[in-house]
Image: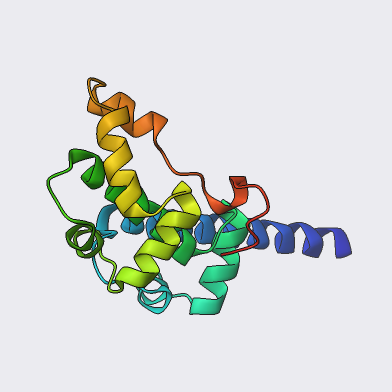
Length: 154
């Protein structure tokens, strides 16, 4: 009797894990699509019928970083592309990618990229001139927290 109950419980748990993973993928896809919108963990969690705490824990387990960290990485990636173009100020880029605070944007940009956005804008224009945009995007991609040596931030 215990063997049957154990198999049923295991199948139920497996099915729940698969449902949770599908919901986490929807959250990640939404972040990828709507990074410039005002998103927060509570809104993301509501969208998939999870609590914010449960979403954060499950997202970190599945993807190695918090939903907020993933969102900020997406925003910084897009900011890098806009700064490389050179036709927008740092402040304009900050708001274009969905950040509400220039200070938070600059701090996070510096953590991920290794230099302030204004310095990046100046240097990227020089270092990527003549490189096709698709190649420039790949070689200038920021390092995520879990890949950066010893940042200890999230």
